[in-house]
Length: 271
Image (cartoon, rainbow, N blue to C red; front, side):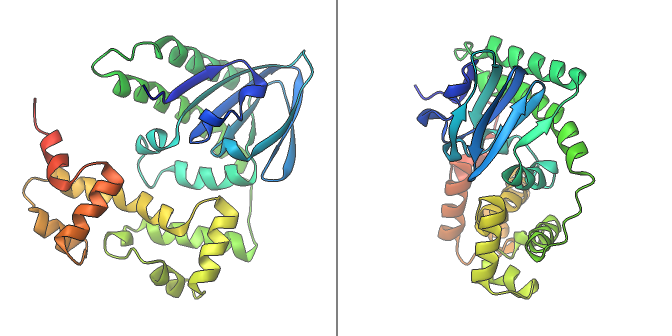
């Protein structure tokens, strides 16, 4: 059975192969250590939180025996599905790609450890009917406890480089809901007065993800909102969202929701 949740106190376990599709949250509780992420070396000590969205990019772990850590990792797609498209999660993931280390106060570190321990205590309850919903609610609490110190770290960050400006403007465009009808990279490149190749390369370098990834992150909640409205037929939704055909609309739903539009709607009905 596939495991979506992991907990450990082993610093050297943070780049294990089974974690490559997860988002890792590691808190240093004593001592200090170093690691390399995106070809840059980071030094961490007590109350430093490390949030890694791509653990396969972690290397060169080094720490004395005195170092103590606790970490929790969960399937990245599962965590992303818990958050609305326009919250701090998207912008935060971009800054974490640039610097994954967040310094916590004693109080913030204590709250986060409580979150870790609640998740660890319920990881074994996979037999429960609403296990994923239960774990989702606990993960969401953990993420919002992280958002606060993360936002405090970034609040004074004033990006002036052209590349950072491009990232910010793309996210601003997407936050308007324009991806309801515009999902081509070329459209956003034209709006930002750059080439599609430059936009794609810039977003990939700055965030670690593609332009299409962010377009879809903003589009899927719009799609769900329409599908949840039973007054709208599937044909109407496809037309509203400018899909060129019903089969294409169905393929898009299946790719991003794991179900066809009809199956998704059936899943909303009372059992």
